[in-house]
Structure formats: C-alpha cells, structure tokens
Length: 278
Length: 190
Image (cartoon, rainbow over all chains, first blue to last red; front, side, top):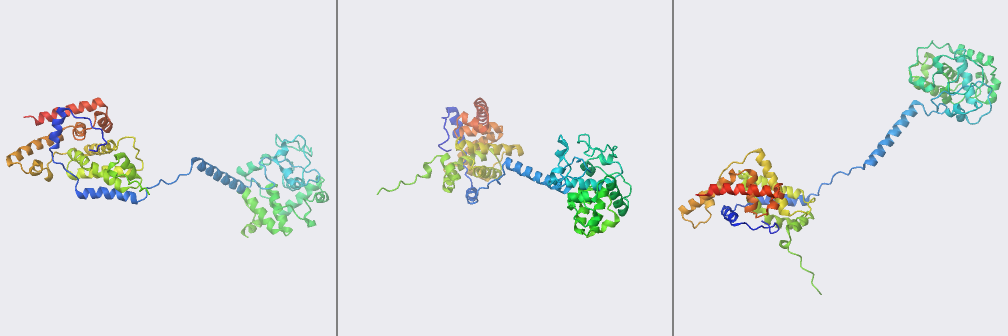
C-alpha cells in the first residue's frame, strides 16, 4: 500500500489475522496485464483528450432562432403582399371619388393611419384613380366606410354596400370568396365604368389633371401595376385588359400575377389566362 | 556557475503529485504510481473476485477508470482512497452480476500456497490447509464485510478512510469489521 494512505496501527487481534492473510501467496498481476495497463495509460496521453463539441451559448441560439423566424415571417408577409406598395394596410382605406387634389405622396394617401385622423384628407391621385376604377365595376351602391373610418368625403350618403365590399382587403384575401356572378364582358365593364364616372362628374379631364387616371383613349400612362391591387377584383381584371389594350403587356402580366396571388380562389378569365402562360 | 537543481525524483513525489503529473502528460509518473499500487490492488481484487480472468479484467478496468479520469482528477482526496473506491465499486458491480465462486486455480495450488520451499511436505500441506481455509473463509464472507476486512487488514486503512471508500459511516465499518473477524477466527480456529 502506498505510504500516502494513512496507516492506523492494527490491534493485536487484527495483527494476528493480518499476518495470516499476509501468508497467502503474494499474487501479482501478470506481465501481460501490466503491459496492457501501461499501454492504456500511454495511449491515453498520445491521443488528444476529446473535447466536447463547442456548444453555442443559449442566447446566441435564441437570437438566431428569433432572427430566422422574423425573416421567415417577413418573407411570408411579402409573398402575401402585405408589404406591397399601395396595399400596405389591412384596413380598408376610404375611397373617394371627389375631384382630386394634387398630392404628391401617394403612400400617405393609402396609409392606414389616415382613417384615424380627425379631418378627412383630400384623397390622393391614386385613391381617386382607384375609386374611379372601382366604382363602375361594383354594383351601383358605393361602399360605405367602415365603422371606424371617417365619413365618406363625398358625402354621397349612398346606401350600405354588400358585405363583400365591406370586408377589409386582408379579410378578403383570407376568407374564401363566395361564388360571384360571372364577370361581365370586358367591353361592357369598361363602358359601365365610363358611364358611372360620367354620372358622378368625374371626367377624363379631371382625372387627367391629377395625372393618375386617364381615359384609355388618351394613351396617357396608367399607374404602376402594383397600384392595381387596390381595385376590386372585377375592376382589377378590367385594368389588366386595359393595360393590354394600351400595349402595357408587362404591366398587365405583373398585375394579373398579383391578382392571382391575392385572389387564389378567383378564376382568371379565359381571355387573360394566356398572360400567365407567358 | 551554479548547476541547475536536479529534477526531483519521481519516487519522492506523493501519489497525488504523480497523478497530476500524469494528467499533464508525464507517463513516467504513471508508471511510478502503478508500480506502487499494482500489487496491493491486485491482491485486493483477486481475494474478492474469481476466476482470475475476471479479477484481471476488474484490475485493468480500475486503472482504465483512473486513466480516463486523469483530467478531472483533483487531489482533494488521497489517491489511494480514490483508487480503492473505484476498485470496490467495480467489484460490487461484479458481485451483482455473479456471485464469486470459491475456487483454487493453478496459482492457488498447494505448491503455490505453501510458499516456503524449505518446508517439509507435511508442513507444506498443513500450511496449505490453513491458507485454503482462510481463503474459503474470506470468500464466504458477505461482500461488504470482506471488503472492509481487506482494507483494514491488508491496507491498514483507518476506519474513517474505509468508510470513505465504501460509502458508509465509521460505526458501520467498525461493525462489519467485527463480524468479519469473528467469522474468520471461528473458521480458522482449531
């Protein structure tokens, strides 16, 4: 035994038995066993001690996970069009068909915060353009503002619209669209649109002055295709056709793709399907 | 010019220092440590475990645990205590697997047990019978009593240290030791 271990003297009784045990053969490990043990010790030194794989600190893992989730959410939101210019709100923006005031900031006009402002802001050119496009495509009754929305700047006092029109755009995207009447022929739709505009005193000149919505016959540029997303489905499709008529095929294609994305349950009319194929 | 101090001889170092040196990469330190403990540890295991091959395996496994734990070793407890603690646990594991059988293999033959070659055949046979009875008495002891007896009589450890190795209190060690000695005396008595 090693001298390091404390030796407690044995009492005579213990000593007698210890002597008897000591007379037992002093067996020793075999040389081969010694060699195995020593080799084991030597190999352990030669092989580097295994280091545990470095683990990322928990806070780093959590941060990475959060960042990844945020990027994923942003990507999904982007794909869903939530961040689209011109549709940056899930709350319906009150439409106005009043004569347009010159507003340079179109985004401001569609900002969701608008509806919370005390005084209605004069509609932007885009809103006017959209209103002009939407109104003829819809049933004659104009859409009422949402409960929290400011009063209709036109003050037309129109009766309440159908439930589908009262539904916020985002909800329209999420909820299945009830089966709608087949869209009217494109030409008839366009005619109705022009007729409605005429009835409400919205003339091409007025629109032209805003630089937003021009008569198709004038050849003036249409708004960016992204702005089409603010139109009601039927009007949107009509806008696509209008773009085609005016030679803006890329814009029509982009607009139609956006339409399909935002209205997945809506069947693309046969005359426009070919655009998606390209 | 003053000559540098000669390196301290490894045999002067304590077990704990040797173990730390080995952990730092000094294989010679381990060899010294092994040379100190190989015989007593081997006998401690062989007396409690048979057959010999199983005892060898337990012996090697004990040193294997020492080698594997070299980095974690802290000299808070004495190396010997730690070493025998490892061996004792491995032996108890072995007891749980299979109760050790009392056997006399080739190394335990009368010629080996007799020891002194100068003994006459009658004396050698008598000594052999005595040692055989002692080995049988040891083997018949309950495991916990035999371990305590070996640590006390062969290693001359204190009751406190035996308690540290076996994981029981001093009074329990004392009680086990007393029972074991009584049985041995009864077995070895005329």
